[in-house]
Image (cartoon, rainbow, N blue to C red; front, side, top):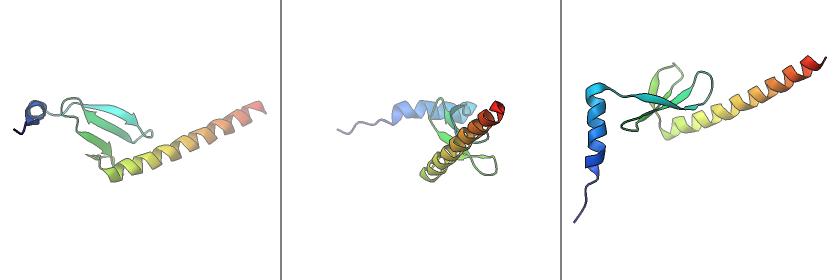
Length: 88
């Protein structure tokens, strides 16, 4: 009496095997680091330190969260600095 749920996920995976993945940017972490998701099979990727796409593991999720926080803080400080310098 066990229902199999592999049938709905089999078709998108088969599509990606035949035609390739169609990645969409789901999150911009920094200017160079982005997270991607395949629109068919929902496979998630991110860019690594070399700029290549790698699978989005929990380790890379944590790294991207930290990078995003650092990048946001730098941009905030940069805006304050340019605002202060434009006043003078």
